[in-house]
Image: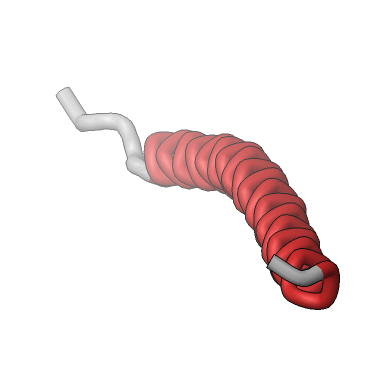
Length: 72
């Protein structure tokens, strides 16, 4: 094989390795972004559930307070 062919093969392998490394880095970043989004969503759901529970609890107590006592 001539030196030119070896150089072309080396350049092709190096370019392939560069593309592979770039794809791996993008995939890693995408996974980290998705994991962070999942954690943020979980925390948001917890806050919403707490707010809804508090709202429903205050509503129930308002309803209980508004019911007149039974006459005997």
